[in-house]
Length: 427
Ligand code: AMP
Ligand code: GLY
Image (cartoon, rainbow, N blue to C red; front, side, top):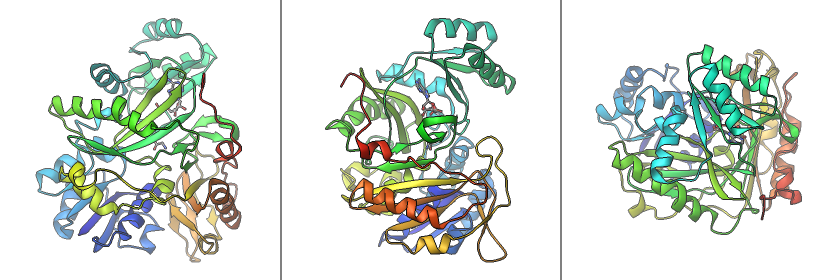
């Protein structure tokens, strides 16, 4: 099976590696890829947000399966264009991807499907915003209704800051969503969906804030780990039953079936599972440690989903017992204003450590054979180990080998899970 992965980041690097490990996959290619992916498979530096350019590339390469990574491509209709040209695609159409690209739409679908989620109000002007803030009380949750790569949200008890964030969003032309504050640990569950039904992957936890102890701005994600031993038993079954199946059925009933990853961003509250958001793709960086534990062959799994034959072929997805931890190394200034140009060294040395794999995102090949920073999140350093503590120690040992001048990373990825300090409110 010939495969093509679309996207530039650490998630796509992890997908490329997992596809290469599938014995049925004979060929893996990536567009546009990045400097790390280019060391492993052929890359094609096209503008993948152009459906037409992607179709032209596929007509040349004739892949049996195209795997779409980023949300922007889905929202731009890359899946629609590829399907119309006769290609098998893992990734939703732009109509189905609206579950991610419009938070108001996602709320409407959840209400129709009876899925547990916080109350929310949409505001299109200042007056409505203030009324919504009065209704929900502090801490305030104010979100951009459109795609904002995880950075469009503010959670604050400062009413003026909440209003200022809302004004910012209005000035970009999007509506504002004000939400009930949900308290409890967050979990990401990737449900592989084939339009009719879905199968869950093992849960992971992401670290969204830029600094240790969840301080600072929201980012795309600074690290992740799996498994989550602190979760209640049957958690994944509950997610399928309470969240994923009702949403997949609702989308199919509306004539816009969802094929791809239904990423369920959840909070485990004292009232049970609540949905914070859906994404229409694999999460970054959660995918990096999750795929490091995957046993089921990824190419065959995603092809079965693209062909609408998932449940018959893969009624479950299996994972290795070991643990995996991923630490994101970011450029100076990320997320507000990432600085390009830092010379990254030590990557090759770190990659030689046992159980370690270095996945690239915003890097370009440097003239000296090393890498140059060219994005916000540069690398995800992933390590596996018999338990979470071992995996975490290995990941940070590898991070220590790598130098990103003026860069930064969190030092507390998976720490609370290891020390037993994650609690579910009311449990
Ligand atoms: P989102 O872009 O919706 O994924 O939000 C990004 C992050 O903001 C989430 O991962 C949470 O940490 C936080 N957040 C979003 N919505 C809420 C909420 N209703 N209650 C508490 N925290 C939230
Ligand atoms: N790590 C969060 C996301 O992919 O949206």
